Length: 426
Length: 194
Image (cartoon, rainbow over all chains, first blue to last red; front, side, top):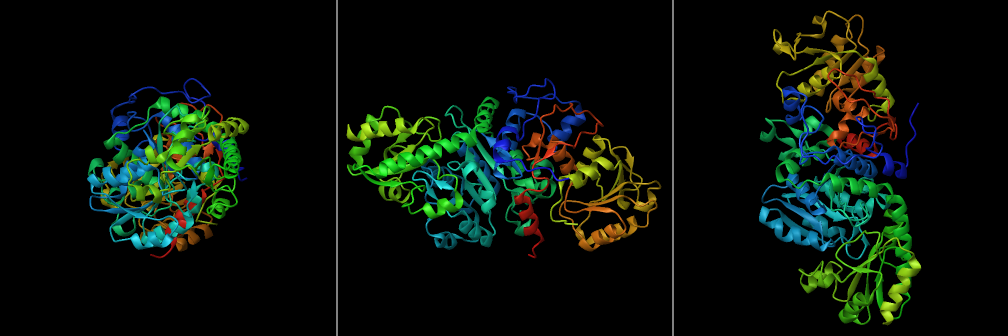
């Protein structure tokens, strides 16, 4: 007898969770504790030596957080996951396993502005060198590969303009280069796109956005696709060489197809320290239970708002891949047939000043630097999230001075359209 | 028998059925994967027998090493082989001389010998290749979930608190009844010549 394959919504509610063995509590409890007692000295030694499954200290792992990790791993179709304090922390921990000082990684130019800053400045001080490539020109990724390239990094739906990346084409470049493809799937969520199914090896998220979904808790996560063979070619010493941190264990041979997630936990999180709070893990877990319902509404509302803006005389252009006329519509239909997400940009005929006026005239949309909230959000990227970039880089990353970014919430779409209408004509 | 991916019920049947496991290539060095697996399976109530000619006279967690399968001197249900793929065949040949025959030949993560598997299956044995029984037991019982690993199982039942030597229930609902798409792809990538 073969078991039935549960659907996405069933996994969103159940994966990773079971009634608490001690109390029978049905909802995953918040294990708000720093530490866990050992059964005896041998148990303690087994846990520290990675020989046994169990809990030591919440910086390394926590039972509430573990449910979140398995939940997201299941939704993404990965072998394991590691939750951390933020999406930015996820990126540091991932790249620390892959790059040594002097190594390089290739990143798509269209990224969240905070990631562009992190890659350009913070990582440079670690000796990790980023080479930029254009996700609309696959050849630019091929040309950027050098013998020191250790990874390729892209966003599935790219911030800020909601453009869709051709994951399979870039996965092919990564495979030929013998390096893993890392996909930031924050704006799509696994409900819209599952990058591992399209050839990604590692998926990262800011859980703060649609997965948590309510704008109340920071978190990040790393999902191991289990797809990359770390034993090939001795390029990844954190995974494939005896680790002095653990008396000579080789992570890859000991943990098989979830070795990358273990390396992130026991070499990255343990030593760098950006642990997520169990309370945040609980809040995000609760959010994920309604992810499919929320994403349906987010996408339905976003499409309606984009169509309204596209027909408005004050609007110069709308970048939303869900519109039939959009240059990314073909990729959206291939990769995200259930919806093109809910973050997109548009530009106003009145330029920079009209953008600033619009933001200040809106009454329902909140002016803030986040996306993926139940509430609709608006921001002017050129003066905020992408303000550290020079003008040319702003244009290349989709954040030109006349561009306004929206993150559409789950309110009634008629109210969102009415708010935009009054703000555009005010 | 498809050895690229296994139905969970196949693995579940083996781990629920066997009681004694001879581990060929068991190491007394406590950072080796074989030591991890030996210790875990002993803690989960299996009767473990370490087989390694280099350590005869010593014992592993209180179990004396034997030099070879024929030195065990009593029936054994499963042979877990911690050797490289190129050293599998002689172990399987020796296993097939035992009386009674073992029920299962298990080859560790990274180890695969299709010809040896065929020979064992022809003699009526079940075969698992390129898997770790510790990982599979931890996964099907969901104990591995402590590490954020996708157990690919679900359950709405309250589980007992595991204690030393306790066998756990492996009969949770499987998500997909076997390997995920991703792990299938990994197995395929690995079996391609490099």
